[in-house]
Length: 439
Image (cartoon, rainbow, N blue to C red; front, top):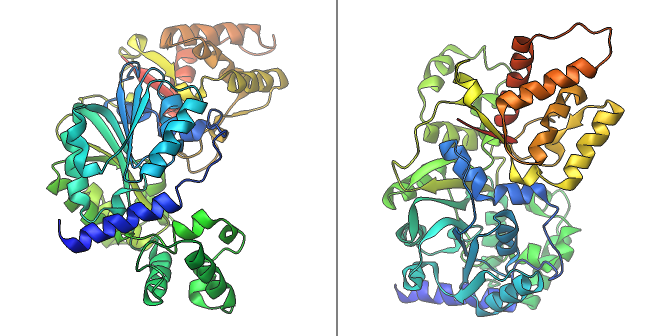
């Protein structure tokens, strides 16, 4: 590594030694944040890729660039029985991460002050790697991906992200301003943070940079300024560059973590009535091309946040919506682990008692584009899933029993009708991975 990159890495290390990130209080716990746990649960990524439910007991999970350990704690809570290993360039951050997990009683965790490129020195293989908000800081992102691949289990999954050059364009302009002012020559600290505040507040509100990037309330948080305006080493890229990096590292793109938020056809007024050229070309476009076009048309996302893994390891499966009637009796239904809480079950019970719709998406909104609600009567047939996985057949029987107890003036429902109604419910929920179905 040349002297310029070595100096950059040292400046990054000093920055996070001086201002460890994230600055979340030690006692704060994510245990009730169903969405955050959902995103960091290996069950989510593994099921999305293979349509199989994996047991996290005994798995080994890496938090690469763990910072002060909040995401390491999330990973521990989201993946019961897994061993958590955290690494970070900053020794000060690693100390804080150790303290955090000890405070919350997580014993099966260990932390190292280590560069991502040095991962093989640990002599460990990982079932899941979480490299959140770190890859874009590396002088060579491909080298980081290659290092993670070298310690990834054959069926393992990496969740990582890179900054979008389009989605973060305003912030990169701000960084260019403060680089020109000399604020990012070394490792920025409190003095540089205050200069950023003074500079941005001095601008007229209509000035483009201030109008599109500045938030006076958030600017009271030093971490927000450091992680945006003064983030040493920060850089953006395009979708084609992301895919080129993955090819160079011999990794396979699985999908965006918030996959429903990247649907190209949602950008058009009427997806069924496109101009002829688009109507002919878009169906033939690759995943890479569709994501690239989305980012160009509507740079909504700051991050390209995605799952990837070793190539050709995806298990063959038939999508649930394509199962035949003969296959459904073999189905086993799991509730997503992050929905299996006593509070959510109580909320569902209250909706059933009050005969109000159960809005399941309010616990995990990220895979949706609009609220997802279930009519209270049929939602009742899902209650057994809080006890554990159930057969699809047993849920149909549960629904038949509920229907028989409903108002006497309603027409009896046949076995076939009940089956179709439960099937429709499960297919609708599986789209969002609220329920997971296996045969």
